[in-house]
Image (cartoon, rainbow, N blue to C red; front, side, top):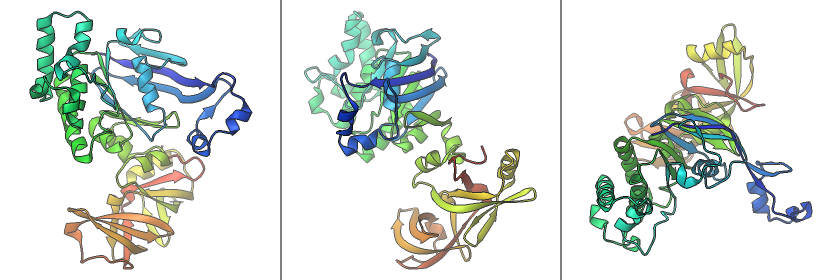
Amino acid sequence: MATVTLKNVKKIYPFVSGETKKKKKKKDAADEEKKVNLQVTEQGVVAVQEFNLDIADKEFIVLVGPSGCGKSTTLRMVAGLEEISEGELYIDGKLMNDVAPKDRDIAMVFQNYALYPHMTVYENMAFSLKLRKEPKDVIDKKVREAAEILDITQYLDRKPKALSGGQRQRVAIGRAIVRDPAVFLMDEPLSNLDAKLRNQMRAEIIKLRERINTTFIYVTHDQTEAMTLGDRIVIMRDGYIQQIGTPQEVFNNPRNLFVAGFIGTPQMNMFDGKLLREGDKYFVQLGQLKVELDEEKRARLAANDVPSQDVYLGVRPEHTLLGDEGVVAKVDVSEMMGSSVHLHVSAEGKDVIIIVPTTDMKGHYKLGDTVHFTFNGAMAHVFSKETEKNLEW
């Protein structure tokens, strides 16, 4: 078991030798668009920027963000598969920058399983232990214990091609478990699975974490995985950390517009609104609707001496409430989701989603119906139009 510390870690991909500005201009538009928000220096393209993170012993940390944000690159630097351009990496207090991957006491599970096709499941799981020249009885005990934990004992004599995607991923996880690593790294291990299997494997990983009790660093672009698996989640964008916190913290108190939109399904409704300061009280105004913010939000805004201003006003779909009065909206789509209905409506020039529990339904909503919605002042978020930061923080 181990702590992991990253101090000011940066990854720079140098330009290809002889690459000129003229050649760079000829790159296709899609490629240019991918790198438009990454910092380009004389040294090259900066993929990870000043990454600072302290991971406690036995903690489950999830790095989450859109494709190309630097999360897999960060994981690969911890594994030693990518060189650290600047900064320091410590595992259990020991500097690891120049330590070979095999000597870092880590195990990694890849997105594409990376199993040896000519070996059986047993041989795949035992391979790393054979390289270490472990005794045969020790290898057999560890492989069978890991297989039992993952419920793959019946597949030990099969080759990977005879297994389903979920079974192959369990074998890949088992191969990592037998090494008893100090740090367990997972790079989008569930992204190749279908939705049902992904949910099942997510539950298996939660159970696994309780049983093997080691430090986990998990990478995903799926915020549902991040919210359900992580003790803390690290939200990344364009190589920068946007926010670090528990799933509940980042859901309830997003620090900026990006985090607010990225965390939560469906994503947060955003409006062009106004923040009004009247004496020692704060209100938000959306169209003709004026809502007083609760005591906790008022105290944080007052502590920052936030004045009245135009803001981005965020309200989550589950906190947007239908009523007899409030903002006028037109129904576009009504989606029955079982225990709730997702109403897609047009209001204030925006597409808005309102989640209505079926127990609160007053009839059916059709295309073109007029509805009114409001929200509680405890559930509203206000973001600066200039910086896009949450004005409470």
